[in-house]
Image (cartoon, rainbow, N blue to C red):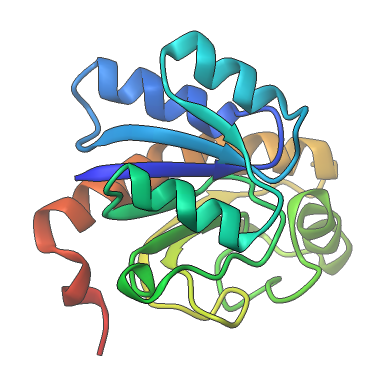
Length: 188
C-alpha cells in the first residue's frame, strides 16, 4: 500500500515507521512526507531516509502532491492541522491520538494538553487510539487502542513518554491491520 506521512514536528513517528518498515515489521511503503510547516525537523529526517519531502501550505497543495505519488493511505503523524483529503482518499486517512478515545479528545486536545488533562483528572489508565480520520476531530472508526497503566506519581511528561512508547507499537499494528483487511472493512 502506497502511504504518505503528514507531520508538523520532529518526525518521531516517521522514525518509528522507517525503522519498522526496514525491519519488515510494518507493511506498506512511504512514498512521500509532507509538512504544513516549512522548517519541521521531520522533513529533514524524511530527506535523510530518502523519502521525497515537501512543505505544503494548505490542503490543496498537500492533495496535489499526494496525487503525484498515487497515495492509497494517508498517515497523520503529529499533523497539527485539520486535513481535508480529496474525495478518493476521504476514508483513507489514519490518525493517532494520545488517549483512549472517547476520553480526552476533540478540538484542542492534542499533545501535552491531553497528558496534563489526564493527570489533572487522576485517571489510572491512559493510552492511545489509532483511528480513521473524518471531518470531526477524533470521531472516525477506531482500528487499534492500546492501554497504558499510570501511577499516581506520574507527571504529565511521564505519561507522555509511556503513551508514546505505546504509540510506537499501536500505529504500525493498525497499519498492518488496515493493509490486511482493507480500508473499507472499517467503515459502516
